[in-house]
Length: 370
Image 1 (cartoon, helix red, strand yellow):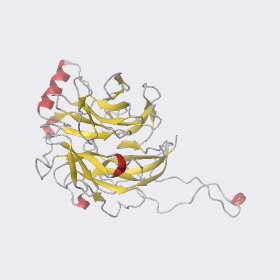
Image 2 (cartoon, helix red, strand yellow):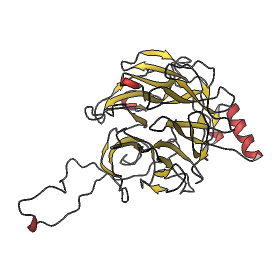
Image 3 (cartoon, rainbow, N blue to C red):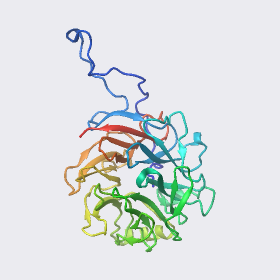
């Protein structure tokens, strides 16, 4: 579920370098050469954990890009008009072999309704995603702006699996309510997702075939955007926790309209069964889109806690005990949806950088430097 609609994109670096010198290459006579620092035009000052950054898309809102199990492909959602889209659909592509700047990738959703939150299944021959296509071929309506900035919890969302040709293989949920935000355990045995089945917005798990559904969280508030730890034993997720009578009333009133306001969220870690629940951030504002570092001891996430205007959002890293907060990106607008490759060598994320003073959100991939 995306948080990009409220962000007014600011102009960033205005070009992609078509070629550049390798600063490590030798010349015929190094003694006579002046040392020149070669900067990457898509990186900002202070982004020391990233190098060799590459822009993957150009135009529209492109987000929630997640690696295949073999790290060769990405699956993501896009509403790019140049690809003939009116609302989000699901695509996948080969990271090194496909050029999305020029060509449309392979669509694996139906092209109907609205989709969100796709993820590869084990063996990388199928994906899981949520879609509203059974209810209506058309895009569901956007919420009224009179409610402020809210996320819609479309009750027509259900979770499906599809092969890479776009054929629906199975329907994993059929509850008349919101079922979405599904991600897959690195062990390949379970799926975690968000559902309103209990009457609140909770995390649930199910086996990879949709059986054995279990509710994980049970405290009032939105729980969502969950990911498994590298060993499959823990979950990291974002949550709101209304406390005062006013906050609780507002939350419940919006929920009755299938809406949630994401302005105040913190990060929580728990075991897959919901035990040992621990809040790891107390930063204020919106802290979300968390993902485990491959070592299992840290998480990377997006946050606007430094701002009183709603933006910028940048990427941060924190230990799972809540210590060691470190800023990773230094954008002036929006960076989010980070995911590490399973080997820890790459980071993919969505950003407003280099968007030509538009509101476009694009995918970027970079080498990770620990």
